Image 1 (tube, rainbow, N blue to C red):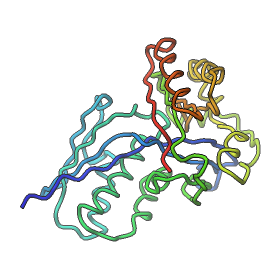
Image 2 (cartoon, rainbow, N blue to C red; image 1 turned 180 degrees about the vertical axis):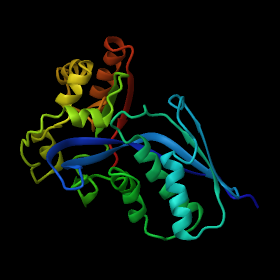
Image 3 (cartoon, rainbow, N blue to C red; image 1 turned 135 degrees about the horizontal axis):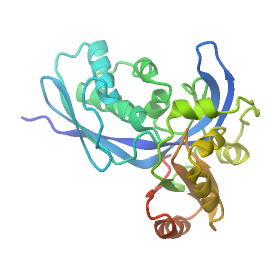
Length: 280
């Protein structure tokens, strides 16, 4: 009997707030952030195979390597070795989200690979140590639920998701490249204070993304898009996610989200947009 094809969503990651603090001894900046995840994202599937392989399709597949350097393949190989798995898997990634856009990207795909292959290979090996070796955002993407991140963003604690669960969400990406390294280099180095404690939505509203201004200096269109979002009726919170360039808006109602999404398609015709909701 042929083993079924298994699938796993790699949801878009959202930084509801992102405070950059001092540089640590390892060269990374200490950050304090609130991670949340959309209901939609890239889709990874796995079918039976004696070897590990990856194919990439979808609207944002162009130019992506499917070789051993891809984070999905690195995650798969690391789990295969750690779990002592002799077989492989034929992986297929449907790349629906823009690449390198502040919403998880390869980190979300790698985390999805770990969750998917732990099911495919029926292993109960802890995945968190492997995720931590793959990148700073991979542990949060592996958790796949609202969490607070400190340190490199990989020291996680769960958040009360009551005010976030199923909240309407609009993502807009203006199609400009703002590499994370350049954004951090453009940050002015000023520590503007800690992220507050408390109910996550209120903390997010009182917080900020310290990478917005350096990203805007590199790509002014991000500032234009944020200003546009912040002026839309029904928007509860509008902010850039991660190091950009994707911006997001949270709403109380689906009707407000859809109305702003329709207006965005008219006022920002060259942008990628996605109307979705936050996961619990």
